[in-house]
Image 1 (cartoon, rainbow, N blue to C red):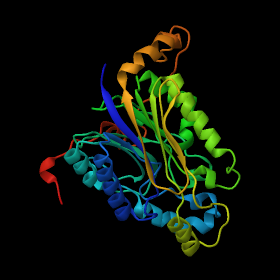
Image 2: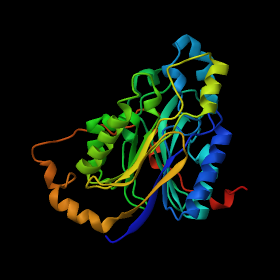
Image 3: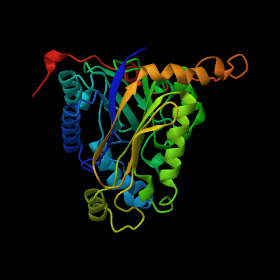
Length: 332
């Protein structure tokens, strides 16, 4: 396969706790990406409406009102794309693919998921992955996703799937994507190095996990992180109270080759940037000579992975199956 694709990780901060303005920022970043001839953009974890850092900094009782507001600002996708429709239409117009981290709210309900939406260059919503295991304080705000949305989707840019944050530390989840013949891994992260106790280790952990998956899966890893901006800190102090456990800045973004070379980045800190690189599928053959994790190298006659991909939530099949775009419904 001689195909080449220009990809980029988006290292950026959203408009915190504002779904409408964060989606507008996504649209603007997609337009800027197109100007740079990028064909696939990967956005950070829960870019819309922002990663809820307050769940790690205040007691659960202090967070009740903030969590209710966060649910109001979370993205509804449903059967037709819902809040993602403007993004789907722009992807179709500009012929660009997107992996977007969102806090997803079930249609007609209050349950939230930490999700990644995958949109192809024709505007089709390929599907949505819901994080299997929210980490630590995340369990107070997001439900557990099912294996039904743990999958790889064929797309115009390659076979793409992804995981969010420490979901990338789940070996069996990564192996499930490997066995689905993943080619591109969209890794969505929050700015962990801004959290108290993580300052000196978060970036090292993320780099280790991302390089490990690139080599062990023989995939291109596009790692996109948000950073903490003044707006995030100001919102938390105004709406919940003073805190000193989350600081400004952070994030670790990069693009990594299947043989572990860093193609773009790493980039850290409170500076918005596209980490841009070219994927050349011709280079994959030489890597597979050494290691083929989805084939003979996994010793399938000895080592077996049992994945329960049955739907657990009522809308799992809808989300995993995605949604085609009705171009006739496009709005300005």
